[in-house]
Length: 354
Image (tube, rainbow, N blue to C red; front, side, top):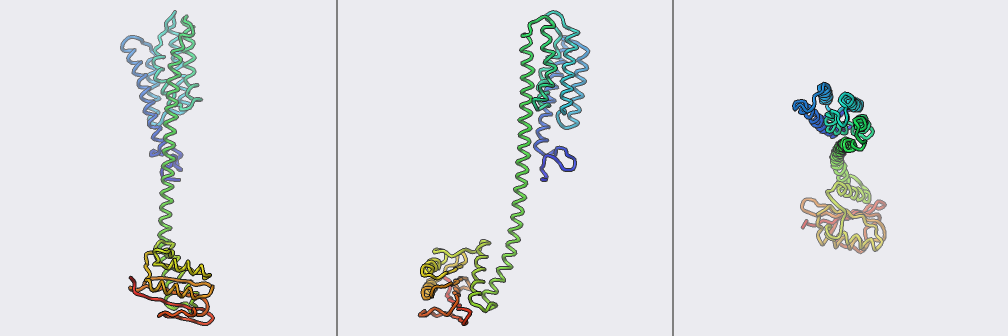
């Protein structure tokens, strides 16, 4: 599990640095603000004398206790506390309604208190099956108030709509914030995973470079210092060294341009039936006289296989041609030709590096 995972393996709690934890802290701030707004409304009504009821003290105490416990936990209240808070609010509404109801009037300060609280219930519930049932008890009391005080039931529609809309808004906000937090954690985990994969790739590349240097040195030693007696096998070793150099990125297959013309020569010989395996280090320019000599030699060969290997040595360019069988007939060039019957032939062409 990555260090940025939203849940730690040891405790199962939300990591403080995770996107989910940040979302919960943000929701806790919103929850606190709306409850503080409701409490301030109750205090203002009590101080102005608009409404005074002993349950106001109970409501303020319950709100302060729930908010304090939420901050201690570092997140909005759990589901059971949200439902209990909704039941408490409905109970206060019902008690005040029963005690103060008279024709066309009841002391509806609990409703004013519930307006911002509905947002808090939506934020803390975060799911429809929690938010709406938690507020449903208070909605039932509001709906019952109109007939109880002798007003048409339709009079309560605006009050019911206000509480419901606030709860819906709070729920939508909570869902969006938590989704963004989860997405941030997912993106962070993917970034950590990608960085880990890149680190592994870099480490493997470093190991490959070390192996390349060791193996390439061994192959070139075998191919150029007479360690292998068979010319064809020696040419194959040189070709394999060139391919290894190309694989790592320090060289490349011969082409018509960068190889000084050897690529075209090899293609021409292949058209004549000679299977040519050509290796030229990247950036090496082969002198024209060697290119001509290689073309003439491959053209004089009968159908078969030839390995052509070019390299730079102390200010010179060395091209080695190895193939089975005797030297090509009718070919004359100032070069070093090594022929061992039954093993094959090796031709070395050397010129000053341009």
